[in-house]
Image 1 (spheres, protein in one colour):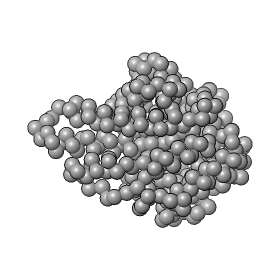
Image 2 (spheres, rainbow, N blue to C red):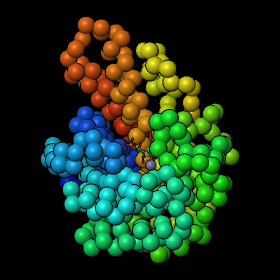
Image 3 (spheres, helix red, strand yellow):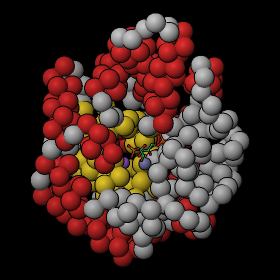
Image 4 (cartoon, helix red, strand yellow):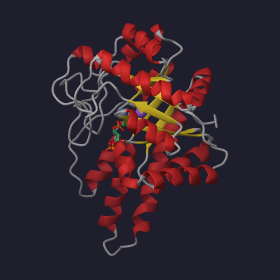
Length: 328
Ligand code: G3H
Ligand code: 13P
Ligand code: NA
Ligand code: ZN
């Protein structure tokens, strides 16, 4: 059944677990997530970016979500807009059946220019008011995602701010977080702690200086009842880098967010954990493997099936390690 983000995260907070929010663009990703959830009895958050909405089409996505909730009737399913850039994006998502939206006012509408406090509070509050009138949930963001090593949002495959960011922008301030939630009434708050979008997050295994889980602990101490969201939470596991590179890929060595650090975050109020890159890598790794090992193959299903299985395995692992399993 479809549920809102608020309903799901309130339960997660009561029981002390986190919920992965997996990005989807197509049917195969939707099926992989739901099959994993079914196997371990997990509730699900699926999210679509603006790019996903234009790739698949709003009507396709709306019917896909309906289809998935019919096919897996026992799995609670929250459909969320990832990184909404303005009121129109958020409201049209709700119109197309999304039960939750992110209004990302940490950046301006172009999603590249860091926004100031008044802009962020203003637009996030307007979206929260409107969404709440019709029963949808809202995630806001305070702080800008980006690397504490370089001061930049991850480039190449990641989206985010342009130009250099200061330490202040890259770490959400606990006192500001308290005011922001009071003023906007968001249901969940995305915070910045040194993660960034895409595969190229850290140039070596992160330390307390580059991945500030301690900042999450400070924020949680200040606003213990607020559901926190961690973006850029792919772990970029070595086995997937190897799978891609063993079959013709040329991804430079990179490091993501270790799952044990996410587990630490979950102990400090992180309830929604955004993951896209890991699943992209799972799919691409299997595509490459089939392409290299079975050079006569041209049936797309022969590529899609192992790709879905690799993604399902990753989703299942996160459901189990975040404590989501058993809570459907
Ligand atoms: O925010 C980044 C997510 O991974 C979505 O990426 O905008 O390429 O669909 P996308
Ligand atoms: P990753 O690129 O680490 O998967 O992050 C995804 C994300 O934050 C989507 O909003
Ligand atoms: Na989001
Ligand atoms: Zn994100």
